Amino acid sequence: MSVVEAIPAGRPGAHEQIRVASVPAGHVYVRHLSDPDGDDRVVRLPDIPPADGRIVPGGWWPPAMLDAAWICANHHTFDVFHVHFGFDAKTPQELTDVVHALAAVDVPLIVTVHDLRNPHHPEPELHDAQLGVLVEHAAAVLTLTPGAADEIARRWDRHATVLAHPHVVDWETMARPRPVHEGFVVGLHAKSLRANMDVLGVARVAAHAVGALPGARLQLNVHREVFEPGNHFYDPETGTALRALAAEHAAVELHEHDFFSDDELWNYLASLDVSVLPYRFGTHSGWLEACVDLGTAVIAPTCGFYADQQPIHSYAHDEHGLDETSLTSAIRAAHRHRPALRTAITERREQRRALSAAHEAVYRRVLR
Image (cartoon, rainbow, N blue to C red; front, side, top):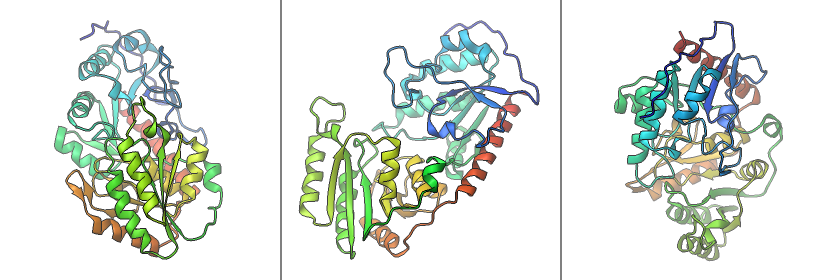
């Protein structure tokens, strides 16, 4: 454990701004917790670029603030410390040092539980230990859905306040009309074949389901790095199988490409009638929220709490297996009930105002 000098931080008054060290700050979820008109009294510290330059787009990972020494040196610059994600870069002991450092300088910790299971980890034990340290020491616990809140209560006997996921897509893009296309396009994006996906299993069922629907086609997408020897995500077996699937089915096409920019991703999602999430474990999805912003239907598995987030088409899929019949039924239902409902911008703006106010209220409560 790090030894930190106990110097209490000054507490803001009822009408003063609250300074938040947010881990991270630059991620779209966190950016969209602010009032859309700038009327909140919360200021989030900007992310600190990692010293070694290893950053993801947006520059927030790995999170430099999530460090006991940094907290000791900088605690006078923030009033509360709010962890969302990025803590997979830290060991449970390092996170223990972080929570002890915060306690020593009397800065409350808030944790939003986005993932009860890390989608990049094949096994749950490490994430369970990491999350357990944070949840057990948090002054307030937040999450995105009632189902996740129930699971948090079951695991840690902690009450979690439920605050919904805000919009993901920017206002200007949300205001554009959806592009017109022929037929019915089902999308399945394999990304870089992360651990929680059963891409081949879902793609094979979807290919047969689409083949039986008039004017329907399945668009598979995968990142090029899956085919690059030496890349961390190199998986020639799955990549070759996806190519073979596209070659075998006239209604299936495979697109291999680099990571999409935000604009490319929005254009891709808007070009689909429905997006299939091929997850066998998980919790919540920002991808799902982006689809809702753009008027694209979503087919999501019964693992996790996706159905708590937004109206979706569900199919049975978890670590115990994939129910092919339910996936086929979900694709047919999406075909029957198109076009998908699109959330109004006015509704998303009101939601964001409410989320901003709710977060400020949580911060002020833990600072009393």
